[in-house]
Length: 165
Image (tube, rainbow, N blue to C red; front, side):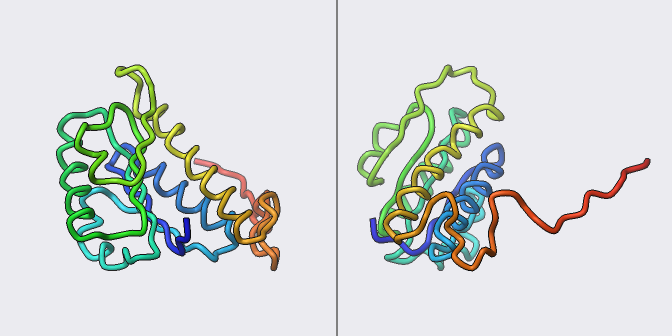
């Protein structure tokens, strides 16, 4: 998919996964794809203006019926405004009408009682895969995509100071 930007959108329990996901894609593409993480409600407060025809939008859905109402509303708005070159939903048990609002749905077949902290770890996996294939498409080496060595596999130059309370 020819995208230049990627937004990962997730409500409160999945915002951390959205942060890690956007960083992963941005790192693996050597910054050629600009990533952003947003909260489900926060996207509408300005950041939606940055979603253009070169933006892939990935929405993390919750199993929580209350949160899903807001996720559905967001998907309806993105679809009605024809925002993004692609819209993907990742999460458990997608709503039936989401197939009309998105380009792809990744249904995570998990136990309904799975804690959100565990589900968050699964949500990052699609970003790894997207980053891998986008890195290859851009002619980069996925294990060392940073041509100027700005990003390393292990963070360098950070001093760990002794902690005392």
